[in-house]
Picture: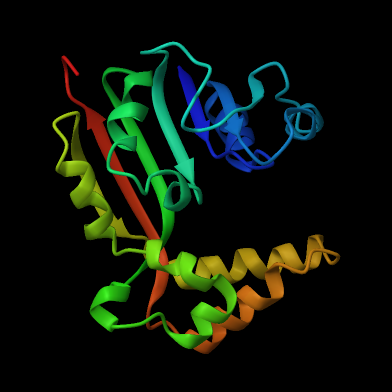
Amino acid sequence: MRVLDLGSGRGATSVVLARDYGVGVIAADWWIAAEEAAAVFAEAGVGDRVEAVRANPHALPIEAESFDAIVSVDAFEYLGTAGSYLPYLVRFLRPGEQLGVVTPAMTRGVRELGAIPPYIKKVVGRDAIAWHTARWRALPMGGHRVVTVTSARLQQDSRRDWLLWTRACVVHRPGDPAHRPVIGMLTADGGDFPGIALVTARKNDGM
């Protein structure tokens, strides 16, 4: 299989896909230099299966219908805000193949709440407006003729796992100041609102 890891960052998802599932991966990110990501892949022993590409997600240097799957982990809340983006993105999928999105989410939408909770806004700012419910995230996808949504749910125990991951980042990257505020945010929440949405969709034939 050939998989596009969209918004791949330093490549953690790409490493898992190549190492544990044996697929070939294009790791595309706009903010991380290809050389930096490639060094991660070489160190992980998957440099022969993962190609790092620095690319604008709205102008991907990739031929149409190149992939058996597209995954986007912790990036689609930035990339997929425009209604026109999904039809653009699925052009790179072969007919009948799948898109998987993992993105920060809310148990109740910000519009329903009336405001971003202060402890979330302090850390995330207005970007939290893009933290929708799993159902909301699926609706724009389902509203397009190009895909059929196959699942949309909040990951079970997602706040716990998010907190576990962030604490691990503090231990292994003590010089990175970004993680401690997230721990404070998730602790202050106590399980009320933030979580992780999992959404999958299949490209419709003929699209």
